[in-house]
Image (cartoon, rainbow, N blue to C red; front, side, top):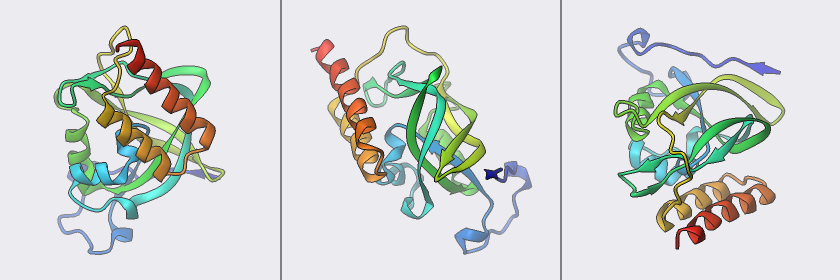
Length: 183
C-alpha cells in the first residue's frame, strides 16, 4: 500500500491550528541519527515527541556515514549517502508543520549544514513516499568519529525505536571502530 504524505507550504497553513494533533497539517520525517532519540528531539522541538512516532522504518538505497563535522557537538555526525545495495534503519515521525522550522534549525539548514531530501521509506509493509530527511551539504572526504555523547544518543534512539538487533550492533561497531581509529 502506498501512502503519500500531505505536503503544504508554510504560507498555505491555516492561521489557527486545531488543538487536536490529528487534525493539524503534518509531514513525515525519517530520522536516522540523533533525532531517532525522541528525548533528544524534544530538546530541540520544545515538546514531547513520543506521540509523533509512527515506528521504525527502512530506507533502501542509502548507507550511513560520518561525513560531517558538527562544530556545535564538536564531533562527527551522521549522514546518509546513496548506495544501491544498502539500507538505513531509522524512525518515521509524523510531525506537525508548526515544528518544521525548529527541525530545520536543529539540522542547520540555514547555515548550510544539512538540506532536505525527499525519500521513500517502508514501515510495517507500507510504503511512504515524499518523506523528509536531511543530508549533509558539504561532506568530508573521510569519516569523522562521533564523541561519546553523540554515540550514546544515537544508540539510545536505536534501542528506543527497537531497530533490529543486527542493525544496532552494526551501528555500534561502526561508531566504535571510528572512535578507536582516532584514539
